[in-house]
Amino acid sequence: MPNYVTRVSVWFNSEGASPAAVINKLLELGFTPIRGAYDFIYRHETNGEMEEADLGSAILETANALHKTLAGFQVMYTLDTHLEEDDDYIPLEDIDKELEATREEISALEKEAISE
Image (cartoon, rainbow, N blue to C red; front, side):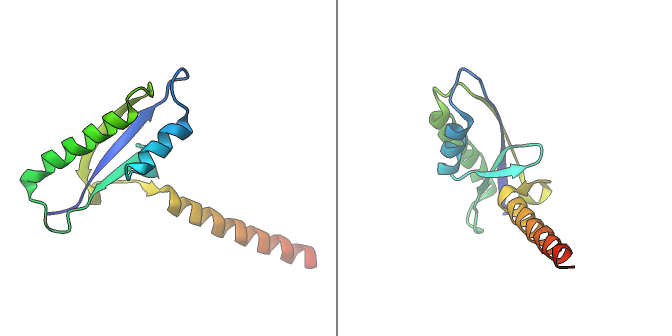
């Protein structure tokens, strides 16, 4: 069975929990922050052992865990599950690596310009 991801969008409320508190809870649940139309993804690791019929219960388990974890935080969220290969997102850790490489290139160019 192919791997699926559950994508999550979060809407914060100024009267609710801080974004940092919400993000930390999502990270604890195994969600990955991403850039794109959604804020986080959860990868349903199948390792070839999950049957198609089990996907529904895996999604329900993930949704229930998210709901329980965010109870009382006064945030709204949406869930959407798709095949992982169909997603158009970039994990934030990949973006951070690209930014660091760009910063290093700029720094090297600045040092080169100063030494000339």
